[in-house]
Structures are given as structure tokens and as C-alpha cells.
Image (cartoon, rainbow, N blue to C red):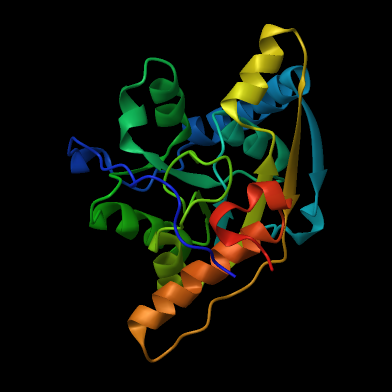
Length: 240
């Protein structure tokens, strides 16, 4: 059951760059960089984290599929890339495009940039095009790193994409990837204990009432993540 919202208002992107929003073209150079990036992520994970991975038998070998994750910290993307058996197309906040380190890496990898807190039709169209091509697209329905150390209220974007495309939804939940935990251990030259769990894939069902369909779909997505997490991480979606 969902509790009442307890997290601060969600962020809104202050600048507008729709020219940067597109589905990444899978060139030879990009495919090669993605292989390199996965290898680098495995190396970083090995030296910085003690990872326990479970449920990988639930992960599909091909798309179309929508991977939904909880978002705790910077290490989420690294652990995800190191653990999943295939590369995915991620959706990320467009502000990272200007970051001195993350920006060049994400541009080389290919990310579907998103303007948060706004109707970003180009990002939605890019994600739908990717799913139509049979790709696996990943996003965090919370829309940001959690400020409550657990699941925040989910946005409806993931439910819309799943219902519009008919794609399979794959919940992937992580623990221990909070910045204070990972960076705190690194400062002491220790590896942080983290987990990644893949849940059973599922589809959302169409309903006559569109508003109810979106709300129910979002609830189902967020509760699928909550079911993979210990109670301390379930936040706004504590399992009763």
C-alpha cells in the first residue's frame, strides 16, 4: 500500500535544449564504447563495492523492455552497467550533459536526455522509438536521486511508456549505493556493500479510465520495486 507523499517537490529543469534530445544512433563507435564502458563499470564496481546480485535469471535477453530502477546515488549507473547481461539505453537528466566528466562519457555512450518536470515530448518519442526498435530502455520513475533514503513518489512517465509501447517492465532495485555510503567507504579505502535485485517482468493492463490507468500503472511499477527492497528502503511504498 502507498503511504502519503513525504518527499520535497520534484526538480524542474531550468534550461531548455530540445536539440540535444534524441534516440542515440547505434554506430560502430558507440557500440564499441558501450562494450568498453561496461568493462570499465565492472572494474570500478570490483574495486569500490562488494556487490551481491540476485534475480538475473529474470532479465530478458532482448527487448522491447523497460527497465525501472530506484535511484539512490551516483553508483547506481555503475552498478547497473556492471551487472546487467546486456547494454541498455538510459534516460538521464539533461543537466548532466554539461558536467565536465559525466557529460562526455554519457554523450559517447548515448543517452536519451530528459528535461525534468516538463512535458518533454521529444524524450518520450525517442524512448518509444527505441522500444519500437526492440531496444531495452532504462529510467528511474522517481525522477531524481531519492532525498528520503527510500522510494519517493513515482512519476507517470514510466507507466505511459509501458502502456503506449506494450513493452515488458523489468524492475531492478538497489541498496547501499547512496553517495554517503559509497564515497564514505572510499575515503576509508574500503568497499561499500551494495545489492542489486532483478524482479519478475510484467506488463501493465489497459483500462478504460486513462487517468486511473496511469495512476494504477505507476503504483504497480513502484510497488514492484518496493517488493525487492528491505522495509527501510521502501519509503512511500511500504509493503503491508
